[in-house]
Amino acid sequence: SKFVVGLTGGIGSGKTTVANLFAAEGITLVDADIVAREVVAPGSKGLEAIVTHFGAEILTPEGELDRVKLRQRIFSHPEEREWLNQLLHPMIRQEMLAQVEKATSAYVIMVVPLLFENGLDRLVNRTLVVDISPELQINRTVKRDNVDASQVNNIISSQCSRSEKLARADDIIDNQGEISTLKQEVLALHQRYLQLSGTDNA
Ligand code: ATP
Image (cartoon, rainbow, N blue to C red; front, side, top):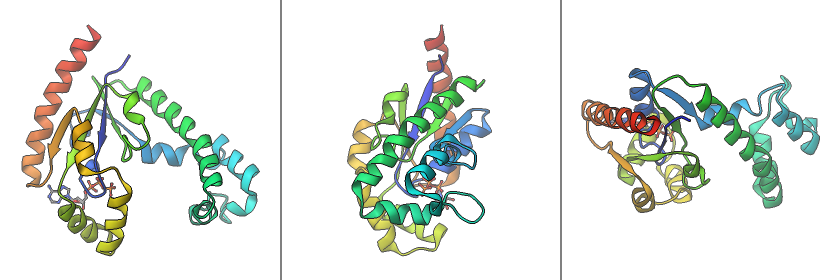
């Protein structure tokens, strides 16, 4: 089966930027955030189960999942959050693996913001962490999303620490420099992954 690299990193570290550089080399991306939306899209089994559990008031007038309402419902109810995770996590895992199997590129990049936190590193052959300092995480996210530094800080605190991510990484991309430097780092890793995937499939 396919050689899979799990790409992760904290908020604003540059996961999307790095993933797009691999995609430019022809590598298929499987994105956990996109899959997480697909499994609750209108007409999905996931959305049907959520409506059965929470009632139709969890839908927007357009028939889509009302994420704000859902977040409110589970916010102060850990048992509801647990129910939702038990429903969605296996669906997300299964769909990501299905997309990996359909991919035709030499290897696949699985983009998973909470790769270690959610134990999805068990699904991949190799982990790649995009690393920047917390100061840069805050600067770049504030600039991108027009949010408060304190909000970004809260999210950083809720994610696994920089040191733990680095300790668990097979490969690390330092994204504290220029985009041109980043490109070179990605190209070097791409060559490495082509070799590794070739060896693995031989
Ligand atoms: P999130 O987890 O919040 O979705 P992410 O890890 O996908 O974030 P990106 O969106 O790729 O991160 O990058 C965060 C911001 O930093 C973006 O606005 C991006 O354009 C910018 N950025 C990424 N790399 C660099 C760099 N080397 N120099 C300057 N800006 C960068």
